[in-house]
Image (cartoon, rainbow, N blue to C red; front, side, top):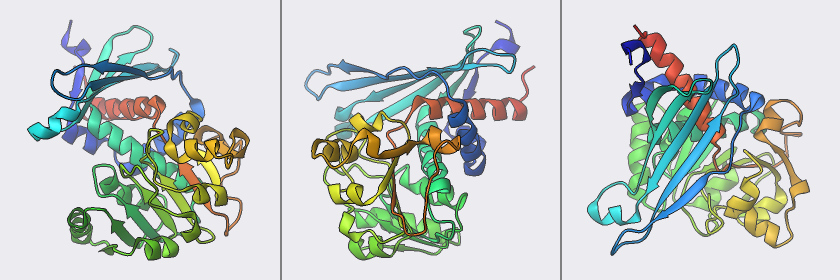
Length: 327
């Protein structure tokens, strides 16, 4: 294999640099319109003696080869709950990118960074259609890896001037607020969650909650709710009333049987497939209008899609080869 054919390695620091939010959001917009093949993700249980079982998750996707190129990729995610006792990350991932016409490997990319950035960017992309254009007050539930990226992502699509951060761990929220203030942003730690939800223009939640944090009775006319956590049926960030009062949108329709925020209202007869207004593909393509009025309450539920992984990986690889030309 010649040097020109050698796969590129894009580490976490490089991936962060190569995937600025404004460029990533715009690239995702086009990618959702163009689409790609996304088969069901694969789950494999890995026994670990004396510890909880681990999980290997495979997320493949590909584009058909054309004169403009074509990419194939797969994200490999390992979830090892027992790592907590070792003070090691429970989740690690890597992304492998290939040419979809030849199978030649193009790159190995830091999967954790790619996942976090495409997740935040997808939420902001949805908000560009669903949040009021004059939305300025952003409330973030959570202060972890994805939550820390949300101010940057939302500021790429709305003129956010005030940011509230709530977390069950107040110290973690305080550290995030200190960082935001050091960047010149008007940020504050939220202790009264109900009041913060009632006064926010956008409520975005990236937590591991298993019971509702956001109550529908708190939602005011015109608010946009973005639910990033609750990616399994056993998890929830909002209650049934929040779904009942909202115009509901999803990243893909897989969310209807994967996300607890939708699974439970469906079981209760509050929500049906016909009640979900549109997927992100339908919104981005213009097939379905996003927000229809100033007072409408909108709710976006994402569970993640390999399409977004492939789009982000392709953008990072292209930018990397421009900055570091292949010989």
